[in-house]
Image (tube, rainbow, N blue to C red; front, side, top):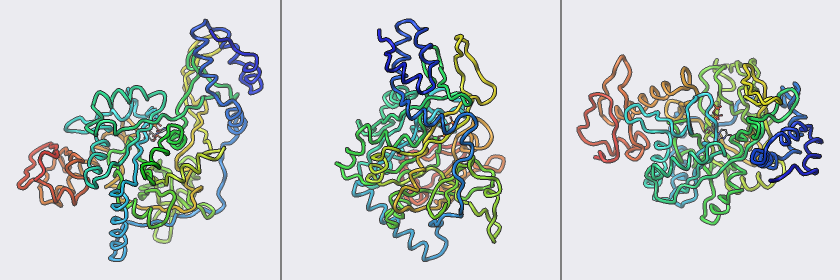
Length: 475
Ligand code: UTP
């Protein structure tokens, strides 16, 4: 049985965390070992600095930009010159893929608390006809891109300690969702402790466990480095990471036009944006902040800036981030070389905890601060960036909430509408129900976009009701 060493007790006291000394001492042997392991995993100096910066009402407003405006962005092509540029970008992106220089990273380390689904969010059965899951769908896209460009397309899934085992089990049970054996790599992000918002004391989730949660999607960069992926990729000639999130079933994986614009701009990091539909929409905006490209989180964007309109009456800060990025592997190495890494943000949350008398408290109001880094905070560190606009209806419909906006229901409707447009363009009639297309699914291995569907759709395909079309129906 390990005991609390005097040196650790001293460090805890110096960091204002002496309640943890009492918590360790109150435990029997097994519990003590567990709690000590959690405590030893902490960077107490870092926690101390963050508490100093963010607790007790400090750090409400993060740095206020002096000048903020829309980013320079490659728009959706509308004229011949823009279409020609897009074709050029597509050719560049396809060449990059064919040369095996792209690796994909699926961010799936989050807790998915808003959806309230039991298990990793990737196991959510969103597909209306087959009940297929988000993991299934993303992996089918990876398989389809590999086939289309004849490339290996290394694929990493970011997990967190809380969902790593469950995620690996799902992949094992589902035989990597049809991907070639051994071609899925997992990396595990780090955790940070939740602290009492007023006192900065680290909360206990159980008498023998600290309240730890994933350190934010920015943790992916350190995880890729720590787990050796950057080295493996460099050795395999992979220069560019394509990152996307588990909760967006419409996401385009390794979209060549986007990769091509990234290459043509000589960018170290690029990002995809869509037009915000309303000022209050909860998405970060990509903006030019004091001359640098940054993402400003919706919670940090004052209402008067979110509502600002340009001369045409459109939102001035229109570019909503959909969290799809292309990032140079060398740039990730540079960012993770530095001692500071990405900056931490505070998130005020309701975190259940165990009080000093051992009773469990389920707070009704936010009581705790969680510390998270955001992947998009790497953008202003890049020597060159590019921002590329996508059509929202083609690429973005996240599943965040159980009901209402950004829910399984909105994603189902948007996917049906997307597939109905592809089918109609391919000359297939799509029946409607109450003015909306019937439930549709198109396996990504049959078609990744409208053009591929038009080329592959079986002749004489007739749709009568809810329909799932798979690669076996290739005409
Ligand atoms: P969200 O910000 O929506 O967070 O993550 P979440 O944890 O999934 O959901 P809530 O807020 O608890 O309801 C956006 C994406 O970033 C990933 C998520 O898995 C999702 O794909 N993510 C988020 C991580 O990989 N790690 C994190 O620490 C946070």
